Amino acid sequence: MKHYSFIIFYLFLNAVIYTFQGTFWVYIFCFILFSAVVIWGSFDIQLGYFVKSFTHKRTKTREVALTFDDGPTEFTPKFLDLLKEKNIKATFFCIGKQIEKYPETFQRMIAEGHSVGNHTYSHSNNTGFLSTSKMIEEIEKCDEVMLKIGSFKTDLYRAPFGVTNPNIAKAIKKTHKTSVGWNVRSLDTLIQDEQKILNKVTKNLKKGSIILLHDTSGKTYNVLVGLLLFLEREKYSTFDFENIFTTKGTKFFTKDKGRL
Image (cartoon, rainbow, N blue to C red):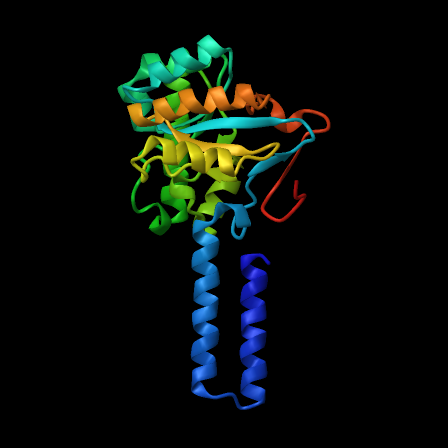
């Protein structure tokens, strides 16, 4: 159920409770339930509660997408070296400030045929509290940096922290972006043990999975080494997002739609 539909349902539920003279605690319970759903919808991009995001590809082929957030960084060249060695294309969701800091690395991503997406200019910790106009500014400023440094423009967008809300939804629509999520989250920025990260990813892998990683540490680089060996052993291929949305027969779904 989408956000505005849920609001209507919530108001209708309150009207029913009022009609049947529900107690004060019933109202409180309904409000808590409403708040919980909204918060859950804000932080779980797979739900598609505020924004329809592509979280996996419906396919019968053993293929997955490797995506990296928050770069480019000092570690990104090692990731690019490994991907080049294995002849694998990935998708990098880049922060505008980081592109300014590592322009040559960003240019290399494009030159080596990887897909690139907008991850806002500053990746603000306050993303969930920004106004629509501020979110548009964040997205457009990142676009400007990409165009200036890489002569490149992207339609792909990934929300910082995976957070969505009505303001972000409006900003995505007004900037004509396509929101890309994931259905395999590595939590590589939180978990310290490399093997635990790798196990978390491989355990949840399915045909068409979109894997979220970060090209921000040597730890995740080591995880990627192990993951590529796993994919090779299990005969998985990889796909990126270059022209993928216009490819005939390609379908993407949000959580609980088109289950694999």
